[in-house]
Image (cartoon, rainbow over all chains, first blue to last red; front, side):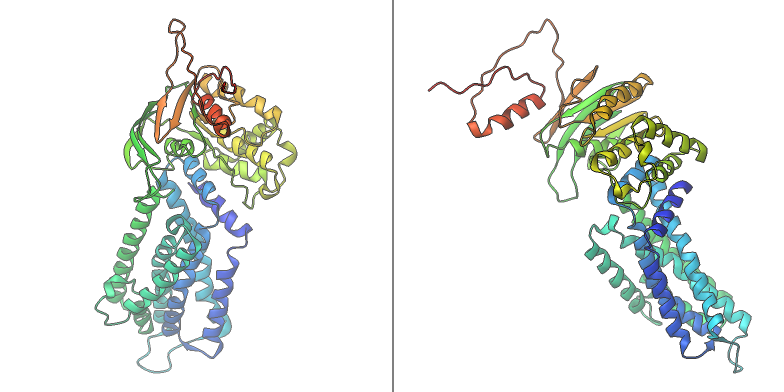
Length: 230
Length: 246
């Protein structure tokens, strides 16, 4: 399976498909941090929310990278639907890592992060830890959304784009704080809120479980559909 | 491999392409699918390799590894021939040196050596088809599935195909072929599976004692060629074609 992951990563890099999401990420982060600095947890919380649709888009681009027939050839070659599906998701996870690293590291270069100025603000290490967590907790749900928007599931570019955009919008709308349907969406806004108030173990554990359960459900559904749609 | 009561279609509301297919392909056996365009030959091959799940029924005892040559090789990929074949060898479980050796070996045999550094997207249709054939063989397959493999192939490679098929069957592998061109219909030991009107059945193997009947058929002149092709595809000999006496 690792050979298929490498092959898909090589195709993704060689076609330059990584560039649009990467450039979008850099532009958004520059806009976010260009106007001044903010408390670490608050800044990271916002950038994690913004990263969600970009990571989902990137996942879709990676999974759509090979022609449909090659995807089926890969399934036959690797010997099982499960391994072929997993290889795509692992490759998507790997390309998400540098984006998260950039999102966490870039504000330090731009001077966009500051320590606490007021007594009610969390100390810097706690805020940074919570901010990093906020980014990590976004990755699996973004993979899930991007996977459902991929051509293997949706069939056409138009339907894929519709799934991607509407999925991102619903995730944000349903996931607002105090929403009665919060459980339907990944905890994007809630995790940003937690990050803004520093590393709170109980909240972080709760929202981590929520994000994991949501992602497991969405990715499990994707795998189930993909078994039929090679 | 046994195909048991298989019904196939593309989507829940789509019409059935094939219904109640019951067939068996023994180890070392060759089956050639015969039927007109759109009859469902490629659909059956997709079910055989596992890229299309039956809506009903099942495919059991599918041998592995499977070498599948699709009808159209997907050449729109950012790899050279060498990179692609080596990568597919690795995906099939070979270590890097073994994958490189297998890629080079098949490139030599299929006259692809001069194209090893050429990008797939720059290949001609026939050369790309050869790459499609090579990727299916980098690991000796226990089931080789060839979907219209003769399309665009040069005479030298075309002559090599029966040899490759014979090597696979000699090592105990099975071969399933869809060949609209008729160039592989008479492979030694090949059984014919007829695909028509949503059904598939194994052609009855005539015995020497059984004898044959001659049936005279009249069709409109405009349909003569198509009818001859269909009759031949169904494994019949067309003995004579004449204009009907007034």
